[in-house]
Amino acid sequence: MVNDLLKIFRNAENMEKAVLDNYIPKDGTYFRLDENNSISRLIIKRSKTEQNELYQWFKEADYNSNLIDMNKPVDTTKKIHSNNYYTVFMKCDILPKIGTNQEKALTEKQLGEVIDNYFATFLEETKDKKTKRIIEAIDIQEINQEELEKCKIQIKDAIPKITKEIEDNNLADKNYVKIFIQKNMTDYKREGKRYFYPRIFNKNDYNIEMNGEIWGLANNNMRIE
Image 1: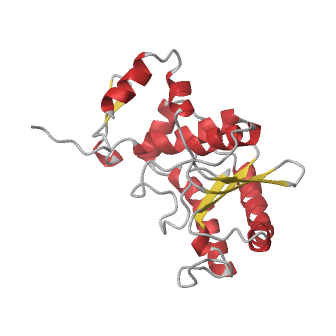
Image 2 (image 1 turned 120 degrees about the vertical axis):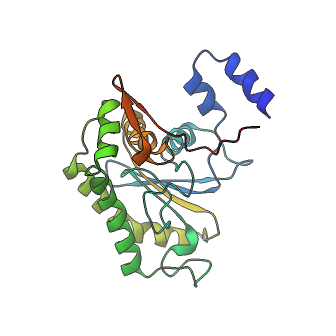
């Protein structure tokens, strides 16, 4: 496995492209909320999905929107598994009325509250001094609160339509339902970095700054033999 990865990266002219080319989105039903209020849908199954233009868009947006791991969520309830305010990823199980496991399914009110808290977290994080300093170090602009609110409303308004489409087409399963807002990939990359960089360290309380650089303990487990 390691040798295979080394071979890929040694021969890669563009490291990011090499990673993306080998990235496979998880199985699920993917929805994109387009600018004209229409909804594009694609069912992704690893071995059966036609890799057309829509697939490539979802693939890159998804790559930039995933969590590092479930111990580093934005949503502390761990119901939403995406990392930016252009996306809401969740298991179909929790969707009101159509969830395949009704013990896990949320009510419409509960799901609305989870989404509200998820979006509020992005603004709360900007108040944390350690997080703010890391964001400043990678030169990312502050969150546009008006845009964030607009994205939240757009996604919440779309969920009943998406739920109905899943129900009408018998798409309910145990896989993901992933909702994306149509944006430039530059925007997705920026917001992915806003999530990723403050979380690459084990805990930002232990970070130190030396000569304008931030140092900390890596998030990955380390073992000395």
